Image (tube, rainbow, N blue to C red; front, top):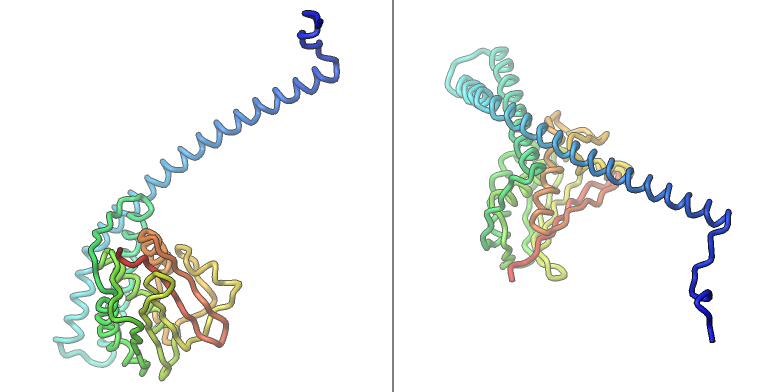
Length: 274
């Protein structure tokens, strides 16, 4: 019959005691490290919120005067009699103010998205119609570079629950980029259809292409690749980052396939309406 002494925990040896002390020390360090990480994360969130507020305030303050500059310079170009040099100067002002206005709008967009203040106003809509409108608008821009802009329809009914304004922004941005980085007399193709139960859209160009080593830069804010636009068009470096956030907020995916000299294809998917 076992005695009471058999249930007693044997005393720690010197080696066991050292091991226990070391475990206790490491556990305390881990707890302290976790507390410090939580504290720093909270501080980073606070600083990020302040940054977004500052960007938003600055962008709002800049948007009005830039809009006035853009409108006034456009009026001078179209409605007044200027000599060739004056037209050149006013056109530079107009182009620069348009670029700055786009940059300001992009900054507002990305600061809203980062702060979680963007509310998607979704409704059921046919992506085919949305893309057709965008292609129609961009054909005038394509004509300036003699680029053929074509729309291939893979399905007539591509119904998705989307924020129409936001997804139109994605489509416009992808087409605009394709035109900026395409050569004169080339072709840009837009496709919309259904694949694997999702809506699939892609924009394909015959431009310079992008090396795989630089693909990771494409969807990061202000990150630029070594590829330059073919006619000196300006780029804010925010458009694709905004596209990524918009598509992902719709539970979709966006990616690129591209190699130098082979052009680029930008894809995105969206869940179909149930």
